Length: 425
Image (cartoon, rainbow, N blue to C red; front, side, top):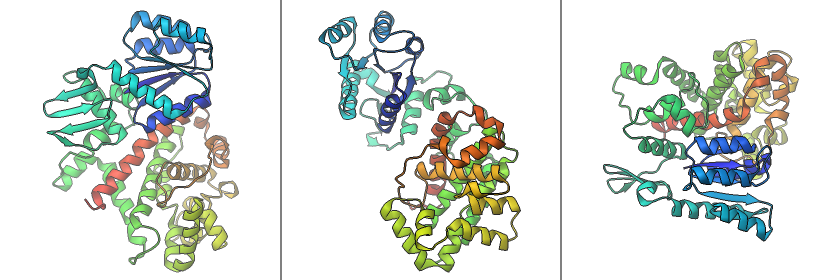
């Protein structure tokens, strides 16, 4: 289901958006009254969360306008105005609920669920096509009575397709509605969700056709990373390590394309190989590295910080020596050595910064070393960001918020690929 948040406080709007998205809603934000009115009028939102104090057009005017044009659309007023007169006015104008700031998110979530249950007729809240049923309120999918577990994006995609059964749906429409992104012909995220799980492949030719030549090359190159790891049991699950390396490679390449970096292919390779120092530690210092990993897991800190405390050096420094011994190109050596210390890179600083930011995005997005890092990250204040903006003018107009939304698609693509190839069923 899709919700519009009309709120001019960016911190509050971001907090509510994050919480609702965790509950599998698609969420749009508007900080401007006139824009909020236009969006609520143009798009089919299932619910609007409306602040009363908005620039250019206040919430009361928006409420009055929407009630004349969309009388059945649920509207929840979320405001700091606590006077009885304000509540009565809004409820008389057609607001379905009224919640005063400050508020508990759990209460807001419960009120939204209640409004959605009341506002949807059974035929609208439960979509049915033959033996496939999708409950939009309970977030439940069944086929022939058997429950199907879907990710949030898979659920949103299936819901959109079922709501538009029999109509012609384009890739651009899916990207805009399900991912809240503007259409980009380089984005293959829809293909990943539509074709990634069910398309049969019974030959190399079919695999190339289904996945594409570049995807097949990516798989072949990235799988070779696994052969570098020790065969015996280690403190790092080889598949977790491979997930991180492949995820970083994919993010590096797409990030490089978006900002106009000269060689996205090199960015992919840098992302894939940036952690070979971890491999070196697993081979040469397994006991010491185990202590560093235990410290990182216990304190939920970055692995390289724990290595510095336990070993006195990081996998970046070790990886740089390995890269030199392997006679890798100077740009890859710089990436491997300085991706956690970008400000000290003397050469190829743009490539180092691309990999450093992509590595951080992956770790914060849940593809790291098998544990959760607890740290506050503002990418715009990262040293690597300041370095990169000096080298790549395209970063000045880069839509960082949209890219982090797309990141979810890349991460799920990696997990799906790894699950198909290696995870037990």
